[in-house]
Length: 443
Image 1: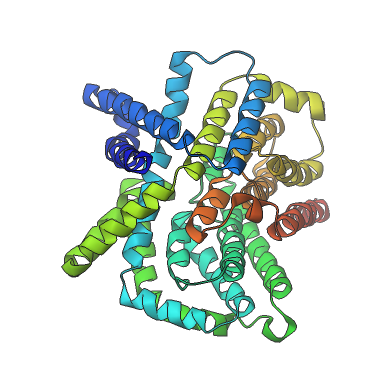
Image 2: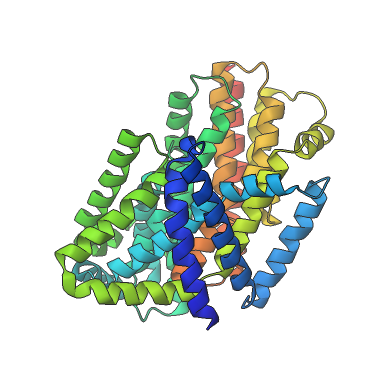
């Protein structure tokens, strides 16, 4: 009974929130305001229903997040503040069902079946580097939308070891694309604080960071006989290559035409592509809807964690607690090279305790940004994006970890505190230190 109620509110929230998030600039229109309120009520109902069947681990994480919110927020939020913060997370009411629909559709595609069969013939270690590279290229444009496509390429009977290796590789791949891709929220966050003109240089630095990270982590994740065998590892993905190219191209095109960020473009584009697939092969429609319903009934824990985390982030962003805390910790202005290093390390360290980068990074940018030149900003931006990448790669409250855990049938703690914790820490400390050293040399 609870599962059916959850499915109803999930679909209702999706349908009501979609026009609201896509037309966010037009919320002055009375009809959209009514839709927004209806979407918030439906979404809140979904979260309350999800609370009735929480796993023990999810309950503990949720309690920790509420405790963090109590420490960060000086006062009990007003109804208006809660309404504004709730509107901020309505995108997730659209994103999670969209990912479920993408995976349900992919499960019916012959090209995906062939990829699953080919991947099943590889050892987990041999497939890791290929999946990491595929997730990186997909994630640079599709963000978390890439996880559903990569997860669907695994065999249905994959054991936990194979799913964990693939999930870790997908996380390393997608989240490391944050360091160069302008399609992430973190890029827009930095743009609100840093002087204009930093983007091209920061993207160039990010490409260097991403290449170094891939070479090092792919070598460490694979056995000696499989190191750098990513070309062989990518062979199983050939059957779905054209479909992936169509999906990426469609998201880029929609983003360019509409001006939507990648996350919003994914939410708009992927359901349309899934609908086209059902029209092309009508006999798959019932199976797709059945898979989708099953996936939605099994979800809820992940959506609750990310929603609570982002609501707290939205409320904290509007308070003065975080800037005051940042000033208290770091005192006056630091040398630029120290800023470059402090940003990623501080954000990564906070993420271990469930602090999302949107909570930790924005106050530091606000503290560090005054009087920066464009040249300085390029390095600060790279430090910020490394921090955002590592903070979402290994945080139990990040959308990436939660989504991958859901898509690969694992527990978020397995991924947040597994082998990727060392990889993300190495990227934060080593990447931040590298660009701090480059800055010192060039100045």
